[in-house]
Length: 370
Image (tube, rainbow, N blue to C red):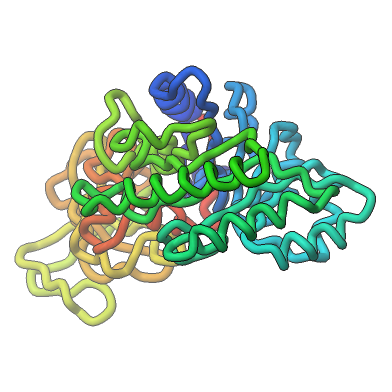
């Protein structure tokens, strides 16, 4: 079946390259770019995106799971890959054999990884918690104990402790009450304490995400992990950044309904006039949230059409009464390049963030690289 016969996500490699270049130009000379390609590259299709980023010279790639890392290796990615999340111990030997870097967030995990890897060497980055209260060695209120735990991890001879990192919880907020600077200070204090007590210097220190890239330049250490900015939605303004994904569909059916007729489940929309309705084969199973029903506009050619009635699992309806050019087969843009909506505007209307809009475009929607 033609990938553009129903609904598809158009992925612009030109926009991706543009964003990668602009972000790279913002980094200090000795700061590398770790591109975030977890969650299928935020829904954009990890293998294709990663291959292009590798061609562009990305220093490191980061994923969330061991399975995601294996997928990239099997797709021909030779660049270093860091697994940010937990790795099942039984997969550690495979990670070592494939040259995949794992995160270690406590001594017990390090000991288990060391036992599993045996005579091989496993590259790891030590993950420390400076205020996210998620994974990693807790530093808040126990800096001395955290430094000792990090130091104990360094003693495992078959673990190559290449890096150390933390994650900011509020760097994307305009006014964060000094939280990011507190986290950065704690991170630096921990690194200094480990260096003074052990003499060990980590090759790669990293903590900056997309928000910190713009608002906290002092956090750009040896590597930057700007994720959402790469895909066109920085939490702020970066000149020239472009959305990489455009969600498109086609009109598959047209009908005229009389004034007073209702549309879709719940009969929440009632036509105030004779209305020409276009049916689109895109619904919440494709990632178009049901809570957006009646709140978004799509683009038909160069015209704007309101979505009407409740969004269904596989379809939704639009009002094309005043769009003379609309016909069965007409291309419709839901969000992205050339559309009225963006992932950000849809996120605002849905009460969420653009990450969720992008990642929610489901697997049954083919990604078409252009």
